[in-house]
Length: 102
Picture 1: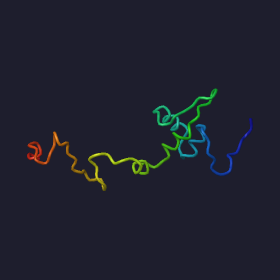
Picture 2: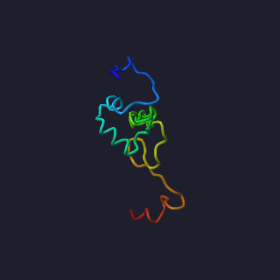
Picture 3: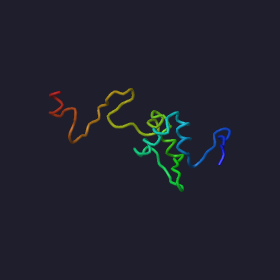
Picture 4: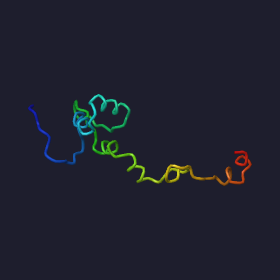
């Protein structure tokens, strides 16, 4: 087998090799292997090769703020990072005895 240059331009593929992922993310191959061990990438085994799926690569490569904007904000965190007043009516209400001591 000879050297195969990368195809020109981005091409959508289903799987990528460890060296390709390392190059795409500008990290070392050993870091990619550690991420696989931590189950941060979904892999498939084809013969002797371990390949990383496109979908799992996109999950890792997508900026976290973009992921958070696609999902509903978690309760208790208001826009701007301030804690919102979120009460469970049966337990914590503004008139609750526990809150009056705070």
